[in-house]
Length: 265
Image (tube, rainbow, N blue to C red):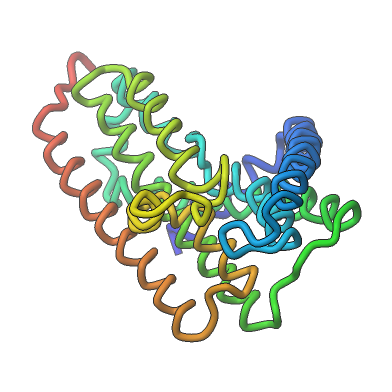
């Protein structure tokens, strides 16, 4: 119940930033339209690029806009707070709490993601559906699988962002690592172009990396390209990376406990 309370309060905290949310919805909608025009031009030249038709491509563009902030593809969320608290030393208070630091901030990030999915995820998608011919999931099962995929995408993203934040224990500033992680996530998640357009071995490699969980996997489930046992295998792929990354975070935090020195007070 504690972690549910943390997630709920994180949801309510982000819901106070109404102006920022409205500005974000507008921005995502504008970029969604621009990307759709680009994709339309590309698919007119190659109507089955990557196995997608033009409707798949346009739908993919709006799913991408819906998940940028929800999954925190470019970084941000609760892990930014962790990095700031490491810099100021306030993380010592977190380490003294009788609860898991990892569980606390994962709950907070899931609360943030839920708010962003309901606002900056749903609203731009509605705008896209009004302006373009988009493809909807095939039925309730597909909707459910998509929501599970998005939840796992947030957990995988949190694991990578938490590792970046924990680098502050040793570097005192995570700016460089965070910028590098954002660039990798932007290209390897499929946000710039769908990973199915990557040529040969680079596509297989990108699809095997954790960043493909951010966008490519949820989008393929939404589009029906991964259904039935194939969809379950995709969810298992995401869950596997989530466990690996959370395990790595726990090990790094345990190692960092030996480095933290609390002075004064």
